[in-house]
Length: 387
Image (cartoon, rainbow, N blue to C red; front, side, top):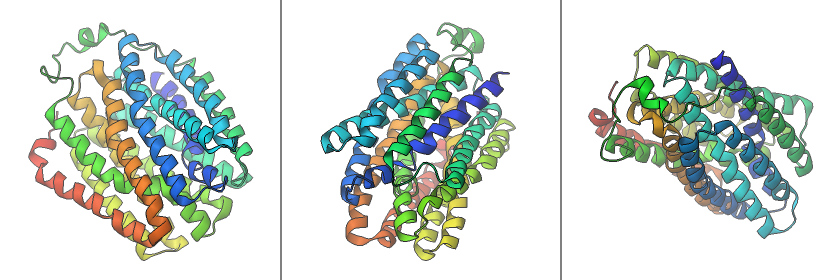
């Protein structure tokens, strides 16, 4: 029953992500902003996504008022998204956009930490629940493409979709289980903290660094590909169907990865390494095959670059961090291994597009997953630990 509720929770949260993520760059371009300015704004929003979740995650770990925090944060996010989408003022757009995205991405680590606590780090059940989120993302984008709504040239329609989906998500939150009280953590597991000297271990910090390096390159398909599909491949509103294709490919991978981890048939390290290899191949395909056919094959590699990546990283965290610090650890993961590198990749990516074009963007960013592959192999003995 808990897993079913988490399936609904993830489904409708990722439905809101289907608006907040792929339409971000287009929403700002609709205002007439250059690629460079869009890159700066999106990059700064990633800085907000790195900093704002930290205090909220720590508060969630401490108070365990998780459901209340999820609803309040989503309400604030929607209220700030409106001026971000509709205001004609660049300063108002920037401030409201930064705050809205920072608050929105605070929900991610809180939700992930909460689910891992309730499921006691069970990668199989978490994989199924998280895969449902992928389906929410895919179904939403597919409906957008089939219905031709929201109109990718109209920020008002984008805003309406975001608000409606957020409302459904908040309704679902009302029916999920209460979080575990802090004192129940050690009572249920009866184990000592993973590290007695600090909240996180040296292994944890090393893995976060290697993940962060690869995510600089992942900023290309994650943050900068929408305009490529619309402006270069001329896909128009159908771009959302290709985004959905990438998300759909991760669905099976999340379930398979979670089950393999739970049965100890693989390790988080192996899944993460595969994600680095997949990202390198994906960027190479974008460069070598600048066509819709190339795009299709590259999008299918999202199964590795996010599906295997996220399940592997989440299980790695569960293995190396005390349960009472799950939300803080997931916030650290989203901040340092996701938002910060995404900020760097997006910031420089916008300037690269304006000055060197998309082909060079893909080539330059190949260096990051390759670097992560080399580091992962070099530190394999330290990182590839099965618990």
